[in-house]
Length: 178
Image (tube, rainbow, N blue to C red; front, side, top):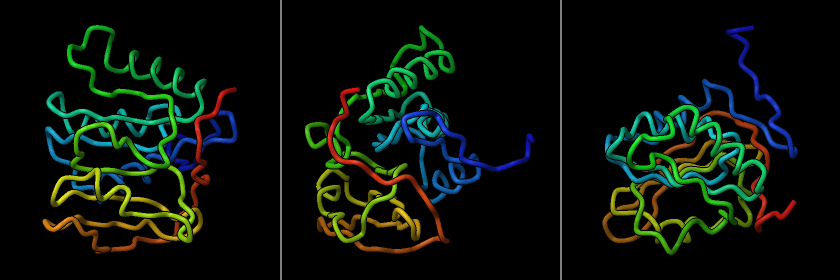
């Protein structure tokens, strides 16, 4: 069982990505110590915790979760992982609608999604405006590929890769109040 890769249910029709997918996504993001990262879809907080470990104490992960119970569940998990008194908050969990990112925050070095986007409706330019130059946007299609995009220095996004076939829960718009 220790080596069985699966996506366990965490309730509310949501799942936690298996460790190999989290590792793949962290690698594709080319995370660096000190990065400011935006995660869309907190779930239980596992992926955010791994990302925070990679960007180190000088980095910050902002994670947006639409389901309030999962946002609170993740906060508890992250407190247990990082401790109550870990100084600067390594992961900031926000209950909200992540489908448009966090336009009121300063620019991010990396943005990634843990829910699959509808390729017919997804507008990468919305997130381009929230990325620094040479930032990376990583998102899965609901049932398609992991798509890696790179922001060049003139505020344009360029796709520079697709990886494998993936299956993610779909990205939902709006802030849930359960």
